[in-house]
Image (tube, rainbow, N blue to C red; front, side, top):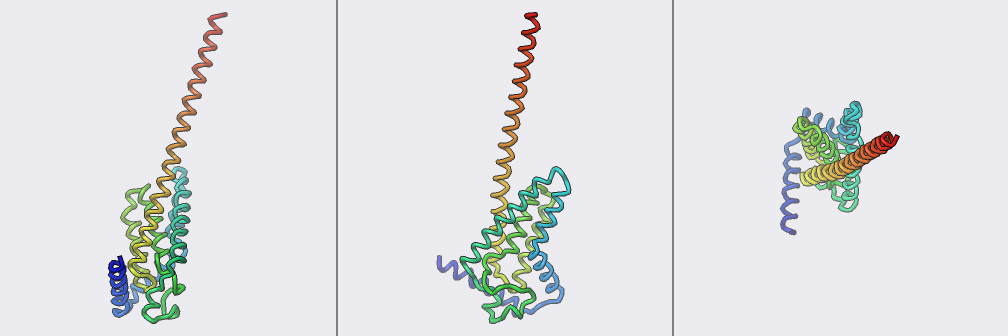
Length: 211
């Protein structure tokens, strides 16, 4: 187990060191910072919430999306506090002032931006299959931007994606089960109403025959 962890850490730092030694690119800097700030304000989840809220048939998905983001963010926050992994730039001997985006030096694992991006993408892709490729592409760019900015290791991003996807799957499963149970209860109530109407008609028929 220790050898696997060491191998993963070696891979993580190797990728970060390669990015650092290669240097920045103005266009990539702009894209990475843009996606980073959009992720900070949970822009993807906000946009999807607005889209879902505009149509009556998709409004229940607003609840699914919000709960998914809250659950995934909660899990990520707990893991960050427990693990307190230093940011890659800290390991490189840099400070927050040297970075293009502001972050605290600890709490690298897992990536919160990536978690939210993949959580929202999973919800969107599940209910709208044609959106799957673009939303997951945007989520991947969001994760890669955090690596490029030296604020997350590749394993942080992978873990964040996993937390986001699994949280979405769990919330969707619970929501679908609740919806199914509600449909069954509604069917049972409808059957009871029909049976009551039949009994009423039968009583009325018997009363008419007696007359």
